[in-house]
Length: 262
Image (cartoon, rainbow, N blue to C red):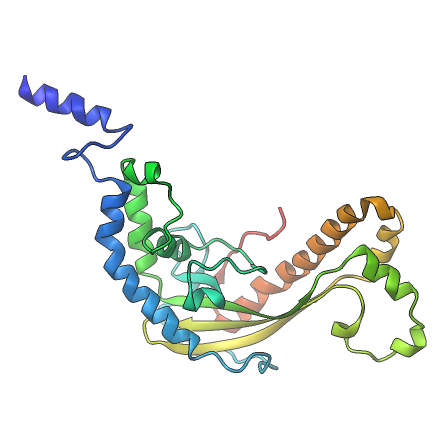
């Protein structure tokens, strides 16, 4: 009878964890915290390996990687984290400009860090096997793809209007980033987390298409925010179009990334 009673209590714990039956999220977090503090230190060291902002002009291809790089966030085959440069020194940071491709390592660092986004109630819930599996898997990541924002100028309705008021001859030969529309410049780095080495780098530029002006004419000033959202999405789609092929060429690895704009 005593055995049956314990079973019943543990079944109840499947909804709200009770002591002695199953680990809570908080129990698991405490178990992994020290290992993830070590990861934070490794990432902070990588930040010191970044070259001067804006200095990347040409591609530096990675040497042959062993094991090969696999960047497929959310898949068990993945061995690479995808981070913004701010995350190297502060994984709890939420940058204004984020190329979010999903990253188990970043999630795990936040769960086990000082600013855990879980509520007190969530921490007391029982931890599923998947939770521990994800924490274990993220600890095995060998590489990190790090994106640094150099410059971003979001396209707006007003900027397209300004571009119509500019003498086209006066802007002939002007660099793309000086055009009064939408422009983004990022630097992309590949690191070996374990060795603390910078393996490769390149720059990524995106610009809103000129054809967007025809679209702008279908919007009124009153609904300009809808145009701004549409134009911003096109800029992000240009980033998407370039990013995966760039990383495959840079690393020789398998790269499968979710689109920025669904």
